[in-house]
Structures are given as C-alpha cells and as structure tokens.
Length: 456
Image (cartoon, rainbow, N blue to C red):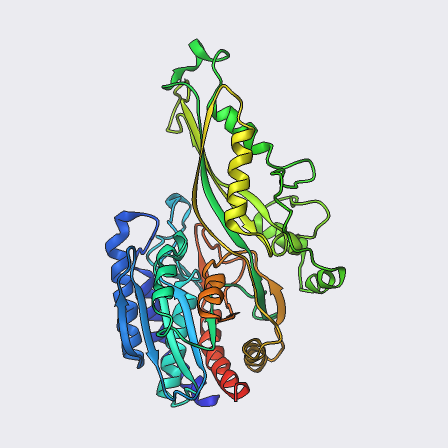
C-alpha cells in the first residue's frame, strides 16, 4: 500500500491538473450546442486511458454521443471488473448563481468547484488514475475494462443498444461504479440500492393565443392556473402521491430493515441548516433517510408559461408546461408508472383546457446484494483505507443502467461513491472535495486487490 500512496503523492498535482482540463470541456448532453465539446471530452478520456496503459482503446460511435472503451487483460483466468462512468454533465444554468464560471474549475477551501466536478467526471476520473497507479506500481491484480458514456444525464438511450451489441466485449464478473455519495470521510458508506426514474413533460393548453388579462381574464381558463392546480392535486395532505396505483408494487421494508437503515448518522438540524430551510417536508410516517432512499416520490423539476421576462406584460398565457420526475423503488417499473401518470393527468384535466403528456426517459430501481464477493471486497477496501467499516445506505438518485447491466450482462453492480450529498449535484456551485478525490484513487486499487483475492 505504501508504494501506491507514494506514487499518488508524487503525481498529485498532475492528477489534479488533468481533472481540471477534463472539467473545462462543457460536455452538456442535453443541449446540442455543446456537441463538439462532448466529442472532445470523449477524445480526452480515450487519450488518458491510453496514457495510463489501457489496451484496445476506442471511441465507439453511437446514434448519439460516443462511448469510450478500453481494457487491460492481464490473465484470462483472473476475474474482470467492468468500470462504468460518464463524461457528460448537467446544464450549468442558472449561470448567475455560480460564484465562479461553471467550466473553469476553481479551488476554494480544499474543494473543486465546477460542473461535473463530482457528477461524474471527478469520480469517473478517479478510476482512470487508480488504474494508472496500479499499472505503474505493477499491482494490477485482475483484468479491468472501462466503459465511459456521454448520455447518462439524458437517459443513456444508446448505451442500451451498445451493451446488447457488445456482450462479449463487456463480459466481466462485476460492474464497479463511482457515481454515488458516501456519508462523509469520517463515516464512509456504501450504497446498496438506487431508485428508478420516470421523467416526463406536461403541457396545458387553453386559448389559441396569449390574451389580454384584463379583457379576457375571468372569462377564459388560465392554463398556468390550471396547471398549478393539477400539480398541487398530485399530493394529498399527508404528502402521499395521489395517482391511482402508484404504490401498488412498492416493496415495503420490514421494521427491522427500517431500523437498520436509520442507524446511519444523521443530524436533522445540520441538514436543514445546510439547505437553508426551517422545516422539512415529505411523506407522513417516514423519516428523512427513508423518504430519500426507500420511498417513491414525485417532483416538479421546472414550470413555465406566459411572460417571465423583465418588467410587466399582462397576458393570460395560451399554454403552460412543467417537467416532472418520479423516483421509483423496488418493485416499481418505469413504464408502468409513466402510463399511470399519463392516464391520471389526462383524467383530472378540466374540459376547458387540453393536456399533453410527453415521456422523456426512465430507468429501473436496483438493489445490490450485500453478501456478494464484490460487495465484501468493497467493504474490505474501505475499511483498510478509512480505518472503519462502511455503513450500508440506500441511494436516492438513479443510475438507470445498473438494472440494464443485470438484465443484459448478468452482472451485479458495486456502488462505491466518494462524493457527498452536499456536493450540489445538478445545482449551481457543484463541488468535489480534493480529499475525497484522492481518497478514491487510494481506495479503488484496494477494491481490485480484495476482489481478486476473494474470487479465487
């Protein structure tokens, strides 16, 4: 272990400089104006994989953004780890809320501030550098394959086709992902499950044009008002989702399982202070940890209609729209929930407006078995690196391809993240602690060591 730490220390500044260079690519997959930047980011990762010692490195084209592949097969009889990550990032808007430019990485108080710093460029790049460390210190104990995509933030639509067409190339014993969070460096944790996702857009249409709010107000239904009422009706007084059938397939945890889940360190006052809220909100009968890990949710991600520019314009808008996401838990299915939402939203629409529901993308929930060799290897790696065993936790986010890997490749996934919930993922001023970045580079080789040993 000392030779690994020595190599990391000797190359610390270069490891940071390379990450900063990657963060400067505005690889936003949701906006076509960044297409060239997305492609350049893929090329950069391929270049760094080659430099680290990977063989057969390819930038594989898809109908969308390319997938970067590379491998190092040291012995066909040894186990193989498939590392997954993504180089695309969320849009940076609203830009005015960033303290420093989102694509110019800036260090403040030991933290890297940039879009993608944690989600997922920083965490993905830990694996590239950990691979370099193992190569240069001649300590790579098993085979390794990399699959780094550029469409995770828009649903990984083309990854599905790529995986199905390349099952032999991607054959492995486990998938390793760092696109999740841990409680803290003082309280390391491993995520044992992820929620699924149903993401869609709704539109409420009224008159055939924007109207003068004085001349027509009170006589014609206002789509913005109707949309607000429809959205408000999607939760009841106990903050349960009101869509018929929404909870039918939800896997309920036992009291013992819920008790174990709530053993994780959590300070509600610190949580509220960090978010700047006086009170928390959520489904009645569940703790905050449960609400964000084992319960399904429905959230409005954006809402608009009418005039939203500077100054006044008294219009009754012709239409109003919203983007809505639902996080799902085992055994819910994204296609079923999307259909239930669509039917319900159309049913509750009053006759004086028309509604349109457009599904965007979805993904299935996933659970990681804690009795597997791979999970045990992750536990041992974290315990060796951090000096204490990790706490098992359920993640509130979604990585839709985890279920895809199990379905198409027959592989379970280990979720070994080094980010923090407070890293402002998808928000302005996204960050990643430098200490977490290097702790990841130090810990990942230990996972490979223990996985190779336990797989014998």
